[in-house]
Image (cartoon, rainbow, N blue to C red; front, top):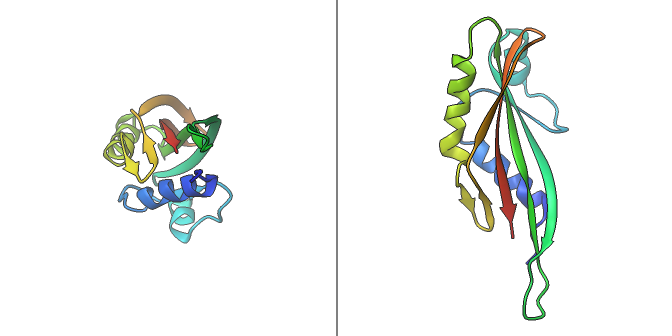
Length: 134
């Protein structure tokens, strides 16, 4: 069975649904009322982006199959001028959910974080993890 891009999206969103962190924005999806309210009230929120990478042939014995790779990125936004602690705590809360997580043939690796800093009224951290499926 070859992994699908839709299967990857579903595995990530299914896992993120169990997070009790903050409202999440997904690529191309309308903003939920909770997300809109958080942004308007200058409360913390996050954006989930799936960045697909290379698809690698992984078949043997005449059974071709594909391994899909990529990175899932969580942009964490907290109100500015409160320091890095709120963003760090939210990034830390994603680690037990996504670091070395497996769901069937979907698996992730170690998470990393990148400080983006303050911009447009928000303080931003990006937490990300490589994934593969297949």
